[in-house]
View 1 (tube, rainbow, N blue to C red):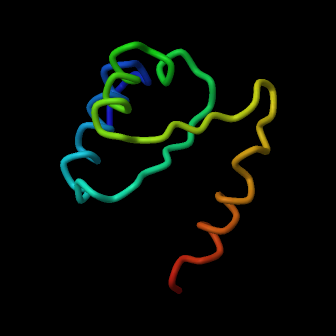
View 2: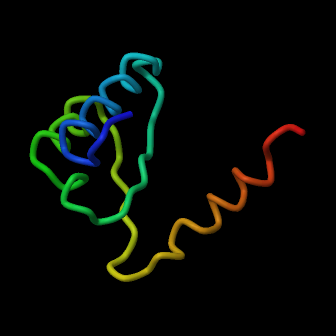
View 3: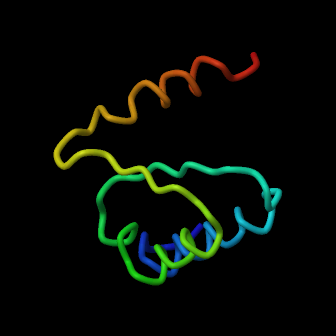
Length: 77
């Protein structure tokens, strides 16, 4: 967590996730098109760790709605 949603914050979060995932596991990471998610340093982590990037289409806030709905409704009670 941080006070600002900036490139340093998303790099730190992705770095923590990378440390906790098995090396051979394939990962698809979805985000919006914000500048923090398109920064060179952030994208370099994707390439170095074989992570596939997925981004919402420009102006399409519902692109991730199916996954968010699934995750919301699949939580144990």
